[in-house]
Length: 271
Image (cartoon, rainbow, N blue to C red; front, side, top):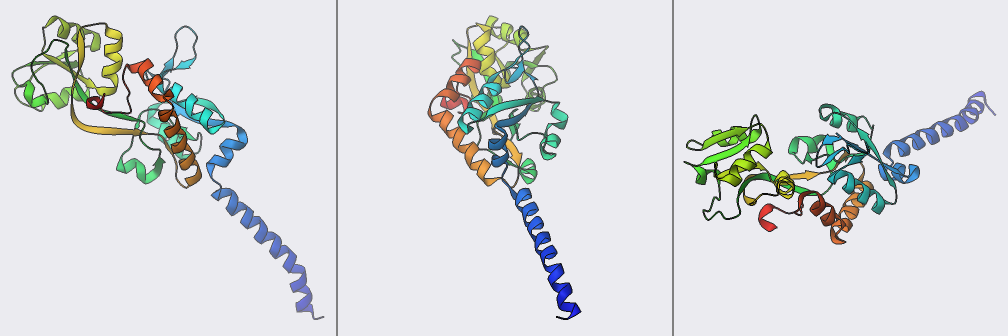
């Protein structure tokens, strides 16, 4: 046997071992996050924890609660695991997902083209748009903001809705510190309508105990989904399956009614 042949025989096992390690490393990096979730038995969920009624800490118990906490619990149960919550500031929540600090964000993250470049999303679980609030006995039909020209419209000071309303000439925009103040003025007839996010309209009306109702949605509909890191098709399928199941069995709707008085997976006009 030549020296060259001997060297080849010696190097071959080392080469095969190296290829095996490289393949194992490649498979590990390509492994679907669903495998990790099932293995550890937890779904790592990020949320702000200070965004009622979606997610917040109960003042009496200090425990996380809210609509999205309920949704996370339902989804985790369908996946056969337990939720593990992390609270973090909104400003860094997407960066934390990209860094692998958690598996998903369940915190009213809108599905946008820009975000879809960096992350995959579940199917939408809530639909949101700006929505009018009117008195229950209101006979006039306000189908758009243009219908409020010459009328008094109440909304929160410094909100996006303020700029939206003021962009239409002729609306008498009245700003308030918060929803309780403009809802009280609307109920008493001092303003003609109010404006807020459709998801919050249901929550506000459910807790206000005033003779008011949700009016027409105005503007485009925003779709809210659950973002996660790209390259996890098995997890995406399992997450969407779990989401479909909780919608089919009524548990999602029950949680929605509990917090908002409406099914937030449907547009206001479909309620």
